[in-house]
Image (cartoon, rainbow, N blue to C red; front, side):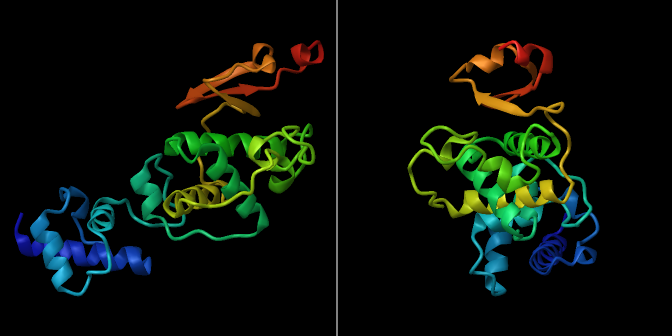
Amino acid sequence: MTGGFVMRGFVSKFYWAVLCLATTATVGLAETSAPTGDTLRAAEERGLRAVSSDRLQAMLTAPALSADSPVQLSRSWVDAQPKASGNAHWRCLSEALYFEARGETVKGQFAVAEVIMNRVKSARFPGNVCGVINQGTGRKYQCQFTYTCDGYPERIGEPRAWDRVAKIARAVLDGRAPELTQGATHYHTTAVRPRWSRVYTHTASIGVHRFYRHTFRTALSN
């Protein structure tokens, strides 16, 4: 592959990512390998110095940006999505993912978000995202999501992690996320084993979390 072709593909990919113009992607770009140092230096000479090398690599290898493109459970797919924004429920979901699962894989973060949305759909929980996340908040450690009642302020100290979970929250609220937990409404980390986990139906294990679906008959006897 010639250097000129790689450079044309890079420029198209860069502006396509920045301007979200899917039609400007160069044909065959997906076949290119990770950019070389020469490619990145050439890009910088064309006025792209404000973008880090890591970000340029992500732009070159990222999938197409499209509002209806299939979700891919990878960091490169998330990083390639437009900056996310939304209403209060988007903010609540983003915060829950940040404080509950920012150290998880992308798949694990989507799974945690799915649990929250499954609760929204269930008659056993509040009927909106913020209501589900803040349920029980008021007394210390007497809540559904510990970060909402642990007595510590919710501060966003990792901007990159926040940007990622915000994009995942956006995809979930837009109905684009794949089903991962078979209807789970509960989860816990592998470091603990809460009493309810013995009577609920285990549906999936993803990263450091185990997921469960409410089992009405056994739960009533708990």
